[in-house]
Image: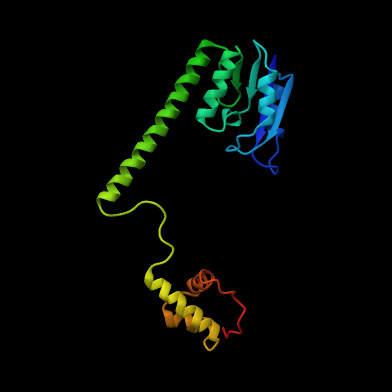
Length: 197
């Protein structure tokens, strides 16, 4: 029996394209789910997995509809293999009911895993090289000391209301947008004080 699984990430997205493709492919039953790729709770996927019998084929529009990540996808495929259930992806041209399909899937998964390892290795090497040059990785600090002092001045001038926004920006040597950013950073409600433009 061919059983379809269709998933979209948000309620704004529609399942129509997937359902049409699964129906055209001959699915007698389709499990439909709205859940983001990162979400671990997928009740419809769990229902599908518990419903399967030996010899069934799970059909998806694309492989990424089935698994949260490569690791999760491989876990799902391993579970299907244990149950002697095939998997077919319409768009990825993968069909594990054939020896060639199983080989292609395993090679594709291995390449994807290899690529992830390379990215991880390159990131690690890049961070080590940056540290050796005295640079630190991670997020930048919010403001330099000089910017912090300008933000305090901006707040003072703004609250006094003696200078217009353009004059304050010129006085502390920043653009009008940066001035507003400083004020928000200092927790000042913009428009709370009467200010000349």
